[in-house]
Amino acid sequence: MTEPVSPAAVTITVRDDASYRVVGPITLLDGEGTAFEVEAGRTVSLCRCGGSATKPFCDSSHRTNGFSSVVRAPRPASGEAG
Ligand code: FES
Image 1 (cartoon, rainbow, N blue to C red):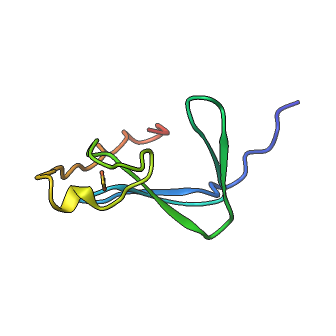
Image 2 (image 1 turned 60 degrees about the horizontal axis):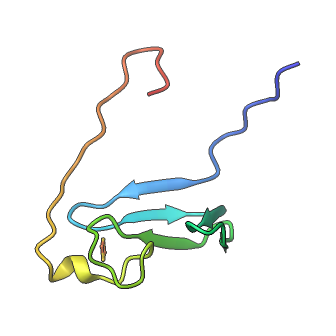
């Protein structure tokens, strides 16, 4: 029997010239498996510029380190999940 698929409970936004903004609930695990829980509706920003001193979290270094990235996800073909 197949488990029902629930609607996505997590939203991830790729911010122009900035971080990934994630709205929970999520469990974020670091490289040692240490868990960081983000409750439903709470937001964290994850660094994607590589410059944060608090990785994996954004510390706003992207504002001063010249990071530039504007991406748009390709639209999936009709019938594909992406
Ligand atoms: S994206 Fe904000 S410090 Fe890297």
